[in-house]
Image 1 (cartoon, helix red, strand yellow):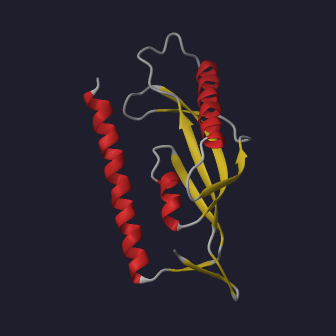
Image 2 (cartoon, rainbow, N blue to C red):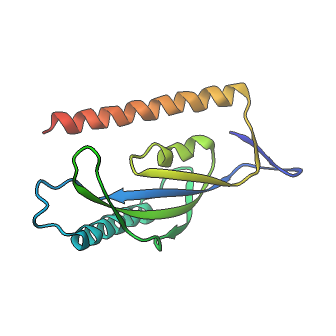
Amino acid sequence: MTNIRTGEDWRLPLKARVRLDFRTPYRKSKLFFSSNNLDKEAAEIREQQVGLLRNVPIQGIEIENIDLTAEVYCLVDEITGREVAFAPVILTIRADTLEDLLRFTMRDDFRKIELVEPEEIYLQRFELERFIYRLNEEQKRIIQTMERKLSGR
């Protein structure tokens, strides 16, 4: 476990705000999808993902708050030239360990993290090594998932 000190007290859980921006998938044709439809689709995708976050327990994570008030926004993808909509969500979470936060920061839709508590974190060498190892394992898992998706096409 990570040694976390706030003042003179030692506590274990971390509190963080994590922003995830859920995006619409690419479409082959822009004729049938206007900006309004993209906004609605992004909002629906956000609702589905938030439903999963609310209903599926994640070991070591407690979701304290889910903020859906951020506006859906649209951008033009630089590679494809197609318009894509993003629906932001801000999660306030408590994590038992730094490694537990990786599940959120290694996501494709991850945009930002703000550590709310504690102000200072002390890691021993073994803890840092374990964190780096866990980071590598999560990266491998993501690559394997992407390879399976690509080979399934």
